Image (cartoon, rainbow, N blue to C red):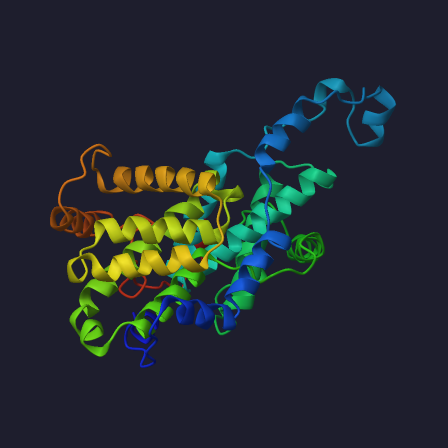
Length: 353
């Protein structure tokens, strides 16, 4: 809320869209989009895993097996199914729960999943790791640890030891420290990915700067609701593997467009201005935006229990969204996070998967 207030009550005033565009790009917006393409791009690594799994495998001799500690082919480990969208969603929900219980920013989860997705993408392309459940849990824990260490350095609860203690013996401190080194190298030390929420914040800053004082004071409550819904939509995208190959800036635009339809702010003027600004300053592929809009809208309607074919009025949609927020109190991707009110236990059992 404090971050949004900065956006809504900004005191600068701009007269035209070109000035708005200049403001955002002058603040590094264009550089962010360049980075997401050149440094933080992620491939569809699950499809690649399936291709690798179906590829012809080298025959294994009895001598090879004995050298690896197996008496015969009968006690050799069976092939473990690769990562899938369900496993990834479970990891993401676990990460959101950790963030809430440890009073971390929920945006840390977006960073965590960026680390995990990009590392697995690189690893599958180079075939540098053999992925099984313990290794996947180690990568997940290391991703969350790295994101918290870089983005929430004041938090003392998420240490290597705390993750190891709740791993139930799956890995050790040394395993996690080694995985941290592998991930930093595999990610080429690109550890600050642009998130969809970052784009939304910058666009709202520009819009609030463009609005006059009367518009800002009259739409504060609606602007807050707009931001909360847009943020919630970005969190839904983080949990959905479908968006791994979609640029965060495109997810931000799709979230803004849906929020503008769902939340009534000053008779739609505020939302329309946000959409106009976002379309003006963001580079995007029309096909990717259409796919993101369809997927995100369907996921949102499913979350609030509404038929995608039933649009309804703006007021009823907004009330339904608020009702769903309270009903989904225990949903890790709830638009209104329970972080501030949830009791933060001193027990490391809070971190258990």
